Amino acid sequence: MLMCIRLKSISTSFGLYLDVIALYFLYEYFWHCICLIGVISVVGQVKTNQKGEEMTKQQTNAALHERRNNVIAKGFGSATTKYISHAKGAIITDVEGQDYIDFAGGIAVMNVGHSHPKVVKALKDQAEKLTHTCFMVAPYESPVELAEKLCDAAPGDSKKSVMFVSTGAEAVENAIKIARYHTQKTGIIAFENAFHGRTLMGMTLTSKIKPYKHGLGPFAPEVYRIPYANCYRCPFGQEHPGCNLECAEHLEDFFISYVGAEQTAAIIIEPVQGEGGFIAPPKEYFKKLKSLCEKNSVLMIADEIQTGIGRTGYMFAMEYYGVEADITTVAKSLGAGMPISAVIGKKEIMDSVHPAGIGGTYSANPMCCEAALAVFDIFESEDLLTKAKQLGEKLHATFTSFQEKHALIGDVRGVGPMIAIELVSDREKKTPAPEKAKQLVDFCLERNLIILSCGTYGNVIRLLMPLVITDEQLDKGMEIIENGLTAIS
Ligand SMILES: Cc1ncc(COP(=O)(O)O)c(C=O)c1O
Image 1: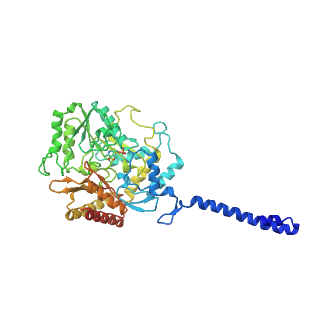
Image 2: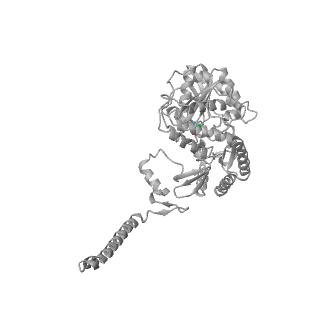
Image 3: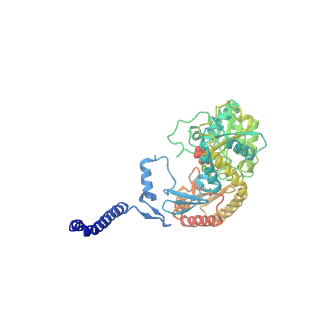
């Protein structure tokens, strides 16, 4: 190329010709340099995932996990080290292009499925209009419409009203505030194995020490604990039926021995314990408990944060038990992933708190409310409660058949598609087998199925798949679980 430039001086007409050649070579020279720099900088970073989509080194699960460990607090952990790129229905896809069948549903949040088109549209439309004014400053319609729907859907005939916050724990905090304000009493009774969140009050009400409470105290005062209706491991050594529901009757003794009813504002109870191990009391239990609460002028708060919005085949699990709680908390699947929670209660109870005594900056955020309205629309238009009931029946039948074959399964329980198996190393002694639960979770993850364990002993495998899961996805997932049970037995 340099030679060509020098030759240019030999003659002007010939020089013009050489000019073109020189420019061509210059262009070629720089172009190759640029390409070379590009190749050097990209080599080792460009990879394609299994779908042939290009990804950089930073987008591998391992690389993201390494970055995460540098900057994300250790206590804020994750059950898997798969980093998710997108999700649809009951399938989630990681950054490496691996698809997973989702039996966890973001811990009971995705009952209508991931990225449901109606939720996506509602969010897009709302984002164009308004994302926040603060309902406590300048209100708008969607929370009103949502509150109407929640009041309609919540069990019982009493006139109700609603307040919104963002998370489950916040709903619990507010339910307790409202109950105390209304009754002008302070005591709160919670249950063994309960989970109510990670805020100060949520953590205090929660039963299990590790990981939820260990080293994180001191806790809030005036919280008392009584045994739950746990038929598989009856705290009273009884067997149902024929036990006269001693677990409910016990409340009266508790008022005599531990905290007076005249001091007690409310009991807070999960209709089916979630994190505690999917423990579902006998059907008559809640009626008895409620009548004892009424007799003693104590409110009943139903924490439906995990059981609500169709998880049990009913919009609210208390409908299954035929009981109207005084106050109900709901969150998780209400917003299909958007952070919204609600406290729904009898109007005279809810309205007792003075203006601005409850609320928050993001309470009833318009994006979240629109997502929740879309959720209600989906339940109706897709008849999701019927689907949920059918799903529940199928899961019960499948798990029961697994139990016949696998001695590891001590108990199959739950309401509708909120179902779990408890793993034990000895059926007679009911010895918890948490290490087997962990092995099963790992086995499934290696085969692209995400499941979660729970329970006081960590030995319960629970199912929380989106209710819109296809038969094929469901069958595949259950087959992996059964293979896993065989492999770890
Ligand atoms: C019954 C129950 N209450 C409260 C909570 C706390 O909800 P959040 O994590 O949204 O604060 C949960 C969460 O799992 C729950 O299952």
